[in-house]
Structure formats: structure tokens, C-alpha cells
Length: 182
Image (cartoon, rainbow, N blue to C red):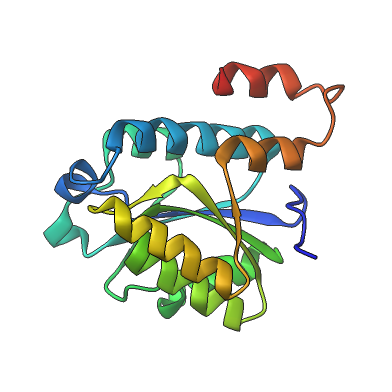
């Protein structure tokens, strides 16, 4: 049985949503909307977040639509495809003390997938928000999600993940969550 997302156990990793690469993503407008909803929802739920940029001197900074939501936090610049290959990322993950990692970002078939693989190997419960990941080619997203599922990653949607962690419509944060989803 697949684990359930739990706001008390989860951390959100926002992976490499940068510059011209982000602009080249399949379904980019829907991706940007989903990323915004996920980040805002994670903030409502009090999830810690880790934010990465792949060789930002070459690919550029995180797009403003995402960076503006992550104020007060600095991205971790990396060169390895897997975030787990960077010591600052693994230190931030370890410091947060969470057993679950919810992934979003780009590209699904490279950095997101390799991060998922490494985190599964390290015994984290890994989730990926299917509507908050993309690649230049939509077919690569499909293959990446399939492969991640095969190694034990739980595939969710943004709305599914947020309401699973919220748990109850009587929660005082429910109305706030509805505002970002609708």
C-alpha cells in the first residue's frame, strides 16, 4: 500500500524552474499555475521547502512567477542532475527531518526523475506532483512518471496532494486553500 502524504512529515522540493528552459516546457502555462498552487498550498500547510537551480549561470534564474513565491529563501545552485547529488540539498533535507519529499519542477525525465531515484534509494517516501512537472516533450513526462511509479514514487496531482495533507474541510486553512485552487 502506498504511503499517504502527511503535512507533518513532508517537504516540498522545487526543482530547476529556470529561464528559457522553463519557457520551452510542454504546457508551460498550466505548469506555472500548478507550481504556484503547490507552493502556496505548501506554505499554508507549513511545509518546509528546498529550491534548486541547475547551473544558473548558464540556464538563468528561476522564473519570476515561482521565485516571487519563495521570498526569504535562497535557491541551491547545482550542476548534478539529481538534487540528491548536491551536499547543500541533502543537508537541507536532513536538517528538515522529514520522511516524505514531494517533488515538482523540470525536467521531469532528467532532474526530477534522477532526484526521485536517489531519494527512494535513501529510503525517503517520494511523491511527484504530475501536473507540476514538465519536460520539453510531453512524451518524456509520461515516460518519467511511469518510471518513477515503477521504483515506488507515488504520483499525485497538486490538488490531490494538498487536500490529502489538509485532511478535513473543518480545518481553518480549508478556505485559504480553496482560494488558491479555484
